Length: 167
Image (cartoon, rainbow, N blue to C red):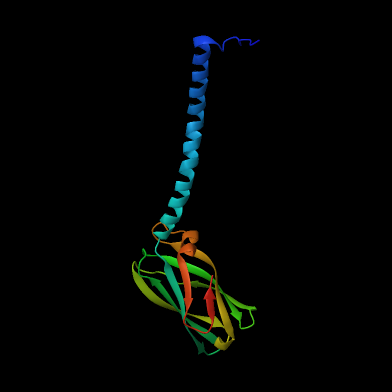
């Protein structure tokens, strides 16, 4: 024998079931929409990053200068906004990969849509001994909405010398 459950039979039961279903949809729909929006937001972030123009820094030349190694650094900001300051932390490694010298270098100011060459010396280090130059960090970056982090992300290192240059 089948027993009817109180409140579940007749029109009242169907009305209660319909109301329960409507509440369940109302609660789960915003959560499902939020889940669908999350991947779109994640996809939008890389697109915004690709809009940021690169800041190309090239180790262009190494030449002896007395007891030092004179370094020519080409900074290509041909697609970016002006920078009042771009101070970088560099490490020179010898040909066997051992750190030799650390140097903080100011590469700015750099005008908007401009390429410049900056010279600096690694004192007490012979050029043939430099096997690699590491862009260790950005110490300062000022101009527009630039920050240390955004400048570091924008930098694309390159080299024309026998020494590697990377970050």
